[in-house]
Image: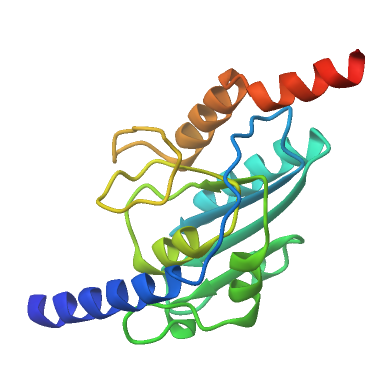
Length: 192
């Protein structure tokens, strides 16, 4: 079984590397003052995980930000109550190819959008989420996973035993601390 998993992983990483060559990003550091459009990705195993992601979405929406959420559900069948949430797209392993590439049109559209910030709320690495975060054209990417070739500009280190709610609190905290020099220069020019 380990051999098959390694073959899938290597095939997926090769395909991801080829796809990444076509991606052009405009990298800009954003914080929660300068960002207007935010994308959230994550992995859902339980209703609580989903509620934690939904809570972050509500928090950011209350700050007048446009927020889009894309989550990967680990179960075989997505519960009906998760499908009814507005502004949240969800997919599962039935909607990825043999090595883990998501096959849905809205995932491809999500990756092509230029969000100001992409927040990855995954605690453990799963290839469908890695595919999305790597190919996303978001200007500033934030996540907790530190692995070779990770796509993040800001990595928040948390213990694997922590929950999504803790990670989202840490990400909000650090995004509030970031002092965006570009935004300051624009404000100074506007106020002059």
